[in-house]
Image (cartoon, rainbow, N blue to C red; front, side, top):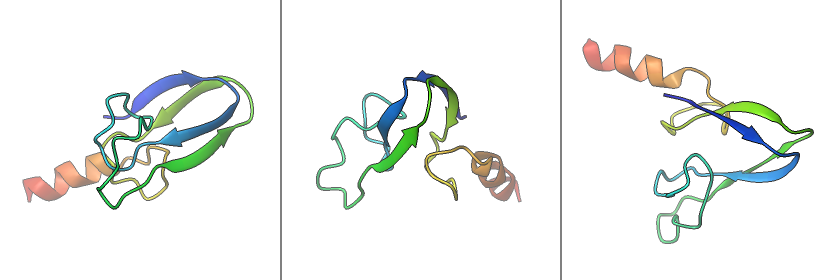
Length: 75
């Protein structure tokens, strides 16, 4: 499921490796995974919906890919 989180304006780093203890944001746990965080900017403080399944086509934003994967596994 996606994560709705309130972020302050500024630069943030989205976890792409799924190892962070502070999902969906990076905490540096990706070391040695070959995957790095995705930098994104929020212009003003607001709630955002970030991907937690790591299959989005538009990181860091949730695009519903988690639903597509569930449908595929049911086939």
